[in-house]
Image (cartoon, rainbow over all chains, first blue to last red; front, side, top):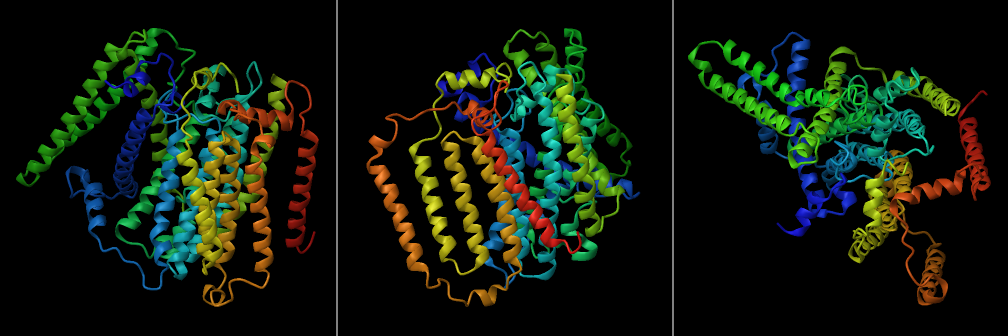
Length: 432
Length: 191
């Protein structure tokens, strides 16, 4: 094996490829993350349609594949084959470039998301600032798209979106600062902006920041959780694409692949802001109770969770196979679903083997592999909860009116986040 | 930052990791900044100009990163590319593009601007030519991981003593506060 591949694998201390200066592995991580996020967006698309349907006592997609499992693929093919319409009066170049801006901003953020202590592309010294800054660039894509369409609904959608993002960024930033303040409550008294550093600070202090200085951490987290819905333009704050008022808002004039790029950017941004929330308040990659239940036996029990999750999914798929109607129409669907269940079961077995083989934390290849899978699993698990919450919100709450939205942003969230920030500083000084 | 927290990062920096910032990056970023800067003043459509200005700002951000100033780079993205340019676009979008595109693009002051730009260029060329006498003879390589902390130390002070620029920094923040209050008062009919 060439040196530029092996030198990173052989290094003893767990650092990110960016910190190790290994461009090859950084590129590998980028590809893995890009693929993972794209697949997650497709899965999220399916889950959203199914979950929303079940919330409303409908079936949702059922035709393409068993329980509509192949629906995202069918949708993707449809969108790619659709005619790419650019309105005659639109600004051609800007119309063309607008979806790419949002997409670039959404995916650039993933370079610093800490899936584990070394499972990130790079660990920047200014990680959280970088994430917030780049994700705030995403709104440029929306604004520019609305303007370039040269049409009234998109323009209004774009204006609403930019006003909304600027307003909620303030409360969001203040909530983030109060979490960063908490990282400085250690022996040396210096905090960190690095995403990995923030999670490690929670590990050192032995508490997730959501529970720190109860209820201050919880309130800051709540403000962030509300602001991030507004930042990603999701219901109930989806003013930029309120279909009852603005047809489809800023992407009214878009069709086909360009429209799907907007959707991809939106979902990628949702995953990104959820990752910020998980890293700042929910302990990032840490499993529950890493300090309290730190016996090797507990390590082993918690490392079985990835395998158990996939066994559970396989069991659900198997139930689907058994409950499939016996009519010959469903023969192919039954075979397909059985194959899917078998695939999930195989992955579960693989994870089980890794968990058992790497159960001793002795730094062997299997142990390091097992640890890596654990970190990524717990991080993704926490992010997945947020993704489900996004769907749940959308199904539950009616859309806000624009003036109500602004009122909440400036008159409720901003004062509360300021008070929380000051209180956190005071309590932090008193405690240390 | 707690040194124990980021021992991995620091050890990598101390071990003399190969800098990614090569001259090639500099030429690409500088070329991008100059080209898009020219587009800013030559485009007739104001929105195109604003988009070109965003590209310029992002290219400058890249240059900051090359100079191991990640904090300045992040603030550049945050404040200029994210905040100010968004407000620029917000205003420009409401301007009637058809009418403004028929206006004359350069007013009569352009020779003055050109002269000022040439003077600045002359200054840079002089500084470059006399570089040996003006600047240290070797590049000061600051470790990327401690640069932000040093800025914080200068602004806020560290280990119980006041920072070098604490007073100036606080005065500047007071100035900004006055500006914010002024904006609020101007928009408010009744105080």
